[in-house]
Image 1: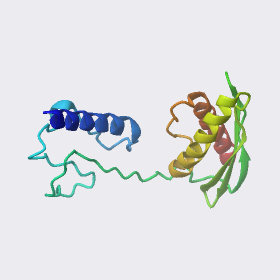
Image 2 (image 1 turned 180 degrees about the vertical axis):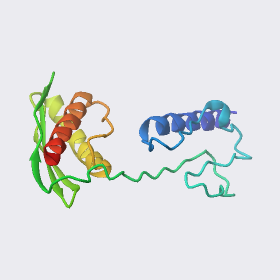
Image 3 (image 1 turned 135 degrees about the horizontal axis):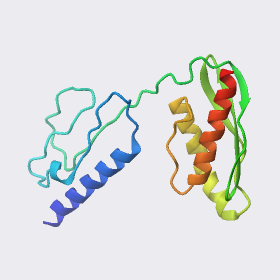
Image 4 (image 1 turned 90 degrees about the vertical axis):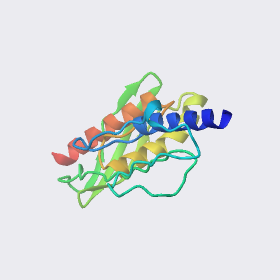
Length: 171
């Protein structure tokens, strides 16, 4: 019985993570895993949903898994090439400001100009969060990015500064 409980708990946790971690296009339906839709038996696993619409594989798996492939929308199209500095956004821990480099209508790099670094904890948090935020912008090709847990204020200021730089690139 402990294995069944562990599988159910793990599958529920995966469903929650998938629900909050992946962005889907506005027109795509959202599938949500619920405890009632997850099989608690390991001897006959239920088929897992495949985003591509392909038939489910027949291989047995101890826990349900899901694969999501996000194709970034060309949100950065229509942008002028060049280097654009976003506005500075202040939060309770300090200022956040970025510079976005655009080439061929695509965001090619994001450089952090200012970030909260007045306390040792802020330096540590941002040393972890800023590279993730840069990757999010490059992946999304927009300011519509996921917030980094533990760095909410920095994430929000980062996204706002990226958006103001993109606005400048469209002007």
